[in-house]
Length: 598
Image (cartoon, rainbow, N blue to C red; front, top):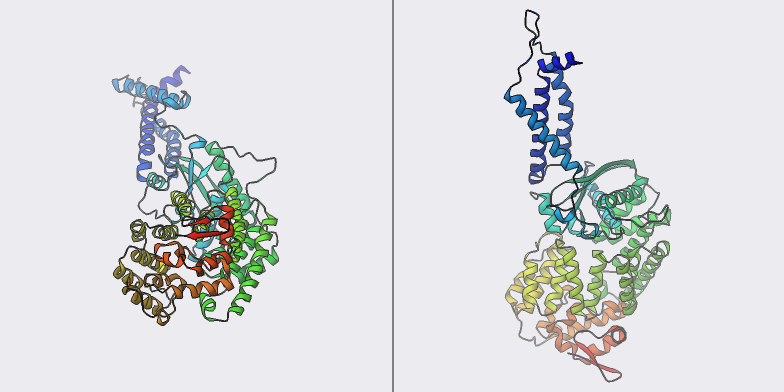
């Protein structure tokens, strides 16, 4: 053994081993500190460590095989130099540092970079990348991302933030730290989805937003029928990595509304994308055979209810066609929608989507208190669902509770700071509340092209008009180019009418008919009879839509004082709702049976 160690020394094996260990440690420290700055993926550090481990015995083998023996056969001993002592000291220091990092206690109060406790954790799920090689499959990867976020909300004490914003945020040239700060997240979940036929491969990873440290990652390569099991496993693994307790009973899963039909889930995600794009009839054609084939799939029933509600009839039918025909069509659609929503609730009473859809139906019928109760029930099941918060705030605003609506909008924007439609609706309620300048600032930061063209420019024009900036309002109406929403003629008519404000029009009956989204211009020129015409027709067809958020703006103040308005809000059930749930900002009870609106 003594001869063996002498031979190791002669061949300078100790010197090479010490030098290799020191250099390898230094390289790992450099990569670990530089990786978060450069936003390098976690596999870079792992690959370097693997290469260094593999390279260690190879380096020693090369040194051993090197022939250092003198030609006369003697084996002189290698002299010990200052370099040897330096390398040995560095090796001891490295071993000591590594031992300290692994074994020394790290109390939270003494740690310069404490790990967040479960109650302090805020998780954001970034949009999973579509690796299917087919851009038309984006709806699938986006849908999987959204579903994973929804499952994580069911983990107790785990705060899932920016569920919609995290999908919509522009990630280009943003580091992990910047994304976390923008979304208000301490941890980020990222990954990719590759779908091929009935197989799906999902890669997911959990990283700390402040350091980029990878806490967990895993690949799932399964049949499409296992998609809900994958979502459940991801949520449970992430909860475990974050130290969150699930509180599940034996055999209980976080995902409770799945399906075993390999066709149903992708069709559901596709139909949901169609509903959000306004293609309700196309979604119905996809969803009706889906629920017939897979009748126990609760989310599909809730989505079908949403599609039925959205596909009732066009506004042109409401305004120009026979009232009885439109009313019959509405009743048929509402009956179908109610059956679908109630079936979703029956199949899964814990699924908030069923209550949200039933609330929309009840509001359309003018059952205000019932709609309010259903939205509250949905919020109890999922208090941070952006869709539920959005619908709840809109319902409050339509019923005249503008201040309450704005408080809910503030909560929504705190959770979802990067969703344009949420900003636009919030701005709409702001100018109705008299905060036109704040509304204009919010809307000027929203792009006015593409799918946002109509709604953004219509609301911005309303805010300009509310601020008395009528010329700018007219120019903004002319920026509307989305013919699928309103005709070019309607946009030009609205611009022409608003240019004449605040002068009152002499003959309101001569004004052209405008769609509901543009009718606010009538109020600015005193054409209140035109406003009442539309409300009267809507009351006979769909009572809950006879009144809009616009009715609570300053421009509508003279209309609110008319007996016509007072009678209408009585007929559509709003006064009963106010007496039961509280009076709105601008109305109050007078005596036992009367009321007045300012």
